[in-house]
Length: 308
Image 1 (cartoon, rainbow, N blue to C red):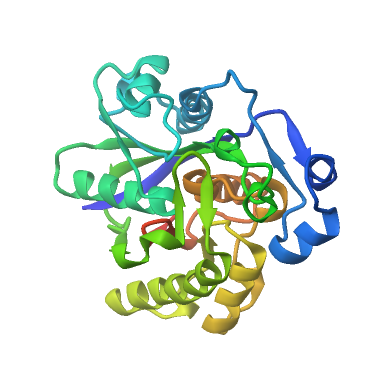
Image 2: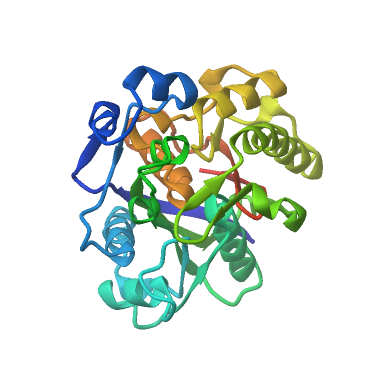
């Protein structure tokens, strides 16, 4: 039994916020932000916009490109840290919006690793035979959590959503692979109460170390090498972290998909946004072997391997 990505979609709110815009709100500059993060702009949703609306836009695009209707979906999983309500889940609101009346739906909260966790969960449901077609979404509205008095975090994050349809497929499609970890001893390095709090130096150090390790571990698990991978799609946290991962692994940045400059850090949405951007530009093509990797608060981290 194999699994495959049938189609993908993404959505960014129309409002673009540049570094120059942020410099009018706080003591920062375009040069300061780019030097430390690689970010040039990000998208902010309007205050009244809901996370489920971002997710639904991306879901509809993924369904359209997959040639499917909402009624064809068996399961909806949304990775998000910014739900609109304590309950019900963001996923059930998406279910309503796309008329996925035959599905069951739930959210996963693993912060910036949320999409990796969601993909892994979807894969397990498919391989167990319980479902055939899963809509996996990463959606975040981080602009609602930002403290514009804290330039170390407020300049990093943006809003957006990405989605893909993962489905059962006959051979010769592979069955994918996942590797997941967490460490609650490091929970205080990155957390949110009313606003985001981050120990930047420690998150930077652990981001390079743990995401690099997640790449190595899944390749060892699957008896593969970096030469077998066409593209690595990391969580878009910081360009310096991504460059550090490339250096630690000894690979060229040409092998890594990076959209941090135009999207900012969109947490659970960053990996599917980067993936869809690379697919739509023609950079990623059918048959490419992909390795997704992410790390978020918790700390949570992991990797996911699949041929597109």
